[in-house]
Every structure is written in C-alpha cells, then in structure tokens.
Amino acid sequence: MMPVPSPLRLRLDSSALVANWRWLRAKGGAAICGAALKADGYGLGASGVMRHLVAAGCRDFFVSNWAEAAALMPLAADVSLSVLHGVSDSDMAAARALPVRPVLCSVDQVARWRAGGDGRPCDVMVDTGMNRLGLRPDEAMGGALDGLAIDTLLSHLVSADEESDLTARQLAAFHRLRAAIPARRYSLSNSAGVCLGADYGFDLTRPGIALYGGVPRAEAAGQIRQVVFPEGRVLQLRTVPAGETVGYGASWAARSDVRVAVVNMGYADGYLRCHAGSGGARWGDICLPLIGRVSMDLIAFDASAAPGLAEGDWLAVDYDLPGTAAKSGLSQYELLTGLGARFDRQWI
Image (tube, rainbow, N blue to C red; front, side):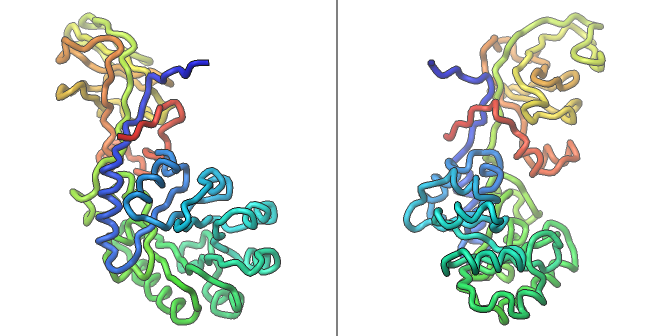
C-alpha cells in the first residue's frame, strides 16, 4: 500500500536544535551537555533528535522508561543512554539486555540492581527537595549506595525557572552529596539550571525544553531558537458574508464579507481551544488571524489579505512556545508534547 500523506506536518529545524544545544553547552561552563529525550524527544521524535545531536557532538541522553530506551537501539558505540525511572522487577530483562544504565530512584531499586545487575554501572537519583523520585539524602549517605558502581549521581531542580531560595538550598545539598558519595560524574541542572550558570553545571547538564525551543528563564530569551513549526493544508476556501458566523457557538461574526480558509487541524492534534482570540497563521509574509472556536480537527483563518491563497496550500501556524504559553496560560511543556501523532514530522 502506498503511503498516504498527512494534511498536517511539523517542520523541525535541525540547525536550530543544534544551535540551542551549543548555547546550552557553553552556558554550562566546563560541564558536558547532554539531552533529555523523554516523551519521544518532547514530541519531535527521539531518534531524529538523537541523530542530529550526536552529529553535533552530544553523547549523553536520558529517557523516561525502558520502552523508550529500546526504541533507540542500536546506540552508537560512544553514546550513553540512561533511564530516569529506574528499574522495576518487570524491567530487569530489558535492563540486563540493553547497553543502557538505570537511574536508581529508591532503596528497593538499589537492592534489585545489586541482586540482578551483574555488577554493571548504574546512575542514582537523590532527592534534594522535589519529593518525587530519588533516595532521601540520609539514605544515600547512610550506606545504601555502598559498593555500587555509580556512573552519574543526579538530583533535579524544583523551581530553577523562578526566583526561589529553594534552588540555592538544593545546590548546597548537592555539594554535600558530591563530597560524600563516590561517582564518576555529578549532574544537577535541567534547562533552567543551565541558565543559572556554571556553578550549577557540575560534570553533566541535562537540558530538555530549551533544546526544543522553550525559554525557561530570561537569560535564554533571544538565545534559544524555535525548532518546531506546525503547518496545515487549506481544506476549503469560502466567502462568509457580513453578519454570518464561523464555527461552533457562533462566537465570531463577520463585520464585512470575509474570505475564510479552513485547515485540517484542531484540539485532537494538540492545537487547543485556548488559541481562539489570539492564534494565527502565515502564508508567506501574510498574517491570517484565527477566527471562531477551535474544533476537534478543523480551524478557520481570515484569509482576506491573501487573495492568492488556494485550496491545498500550506499555512504555517503560529506556535512560538514562550509567546503561545504567555497567551494561553499553558506551560511550554504542554504545548510542545501535546502536538499529536497526525503530524508528519519532517526535519529540515
């Protein structure tokens, strides 16, 4: 059967991805810069992200679970991959078979790895304030990790994207952990932590959202480039006479005759109803405002300023992550990872 093209695509800018990684690498000082690939590379496609970043020099990657790790096999010989959610009983077969390290997150996981990990290296997460995953500092420094071959000791910053005293307290706690627990490397910073500078870099940073065009702190504004560009094809063009309405609820009415472009995209694709009233698209240099409500898989734009627009043409839908987050009230993470499977993902 011949492949059927989708009327939706994500244009993914590989040069922007690499430029973002290089900026984060420089911002982290002497630390090596890795990359978080969880949630299928934040929705871009983890294998494609890894391919472009490996070509740029990145060698350290992180995924959430063992299914995500298996999907990235085989790894290049010098690439390191870690599973952030550790290892359960049901994960042990994969953990023994794959050239991947678990990030052990509890005393039970440590015991499981001691018993079944064949002495292989592991990573360890210690909680310094998130109260999510990780051993408590008293557990980690009280002998629970004795004898483990720890490649990387990690913790995770809670609110580095805000001005919070907790960030400095976490830094101090991680310094104490580094002094007490032998490991080959130490890693604390996510994207926002990288923006705080080299003091937070230690040996390895683990940026995620900033790689993909998100701006976690003001220091990254103007430095981080947009990577993801959603595009949809025009399904139909129609003229809506003055006084008539567009879309569910009749929430938008034409003040004069309006040329309307209807596009194959909607909230089922991650383009959510919050965009109504502020969203837009571009056809070349021409701006087309979003009109009416967002439907499950249809949206409408005022195309009056684009008389040459035809059915089947592609529109670039506005999706700058920080700007869209500010207008919608959603986080940049939600906006990025919510873009759905109906998009063809095309690297440029």
